[in-house]
Length: 311
Image 1 (cartoon, one colour):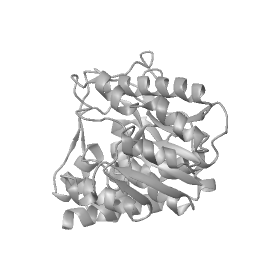
Image 2 (tube, rainbow, N blue to C red):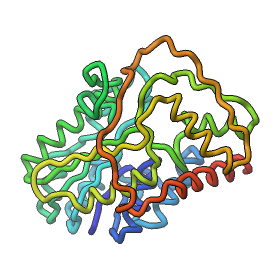
Image 3 (cartoon, rainbow, N blue to C red):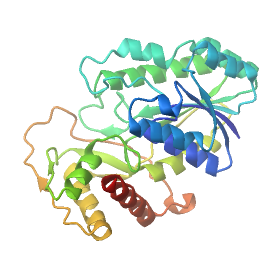
Image 4 (tube, rainbow, N blue to C red):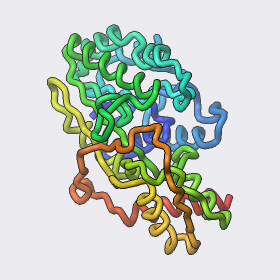
């Protein structure tokens, strides 16, 4: 299976590319710049890791002339559009319209070129934080302007793929964690534990869906390889559905014997709920069929952070 992939320098993108290659797929991945040109070390490492197992094409962004030329060359079974504009994605001032423009640049012409070259399937990555996606409370609103940009991107893809005669799959991501992740919540916990400190879970009552990136990647490959040749399909893979407090305690319990650290944690009393209290995915991956081992995933998580904090 020949795949044209965007977003390989991201946390999940790197994991997806490596898992696709391990499954025998021939991946051509586009990068805005070469690994050594990225300003932050984490992205340099991720892009270099992805480039080891794919055909990397540097200096290309989704929908630009270089990308259109790749599409015109033909021969791809699947376009996997994993990249998205995430600049200041947590900000209330996130530019939804500009992000939509970047996520869908020259979409009509691109899909026409892919179709002419024999491509019949498109796989778009979505987010559980889009309006109307997943399951949860408060009517499933968009979490943020970023969530809105992802929802609008998905709508644009559904329209243009149908018009071009291409099947569309949507792979909806919840809260992934694992090696090479951004310095967010689980990285914050690990940093404090290695420092001998006690981190605080400030929002223990929110119910979220945290998933090992290794399981997410295997499910992505399964969905990509089995994507129907017509119509629309969706996959909403789910991991640990529980309160953030419960997940924090789960992580601490998994890390104590692996790291030999106390992994103490303080659970704050949450009184404010500016976000929906529950937002989760709904499709439980078949870990056994995918060949995924939970204990091995925890081992790899611990090994990654042990090496990170000893360097």
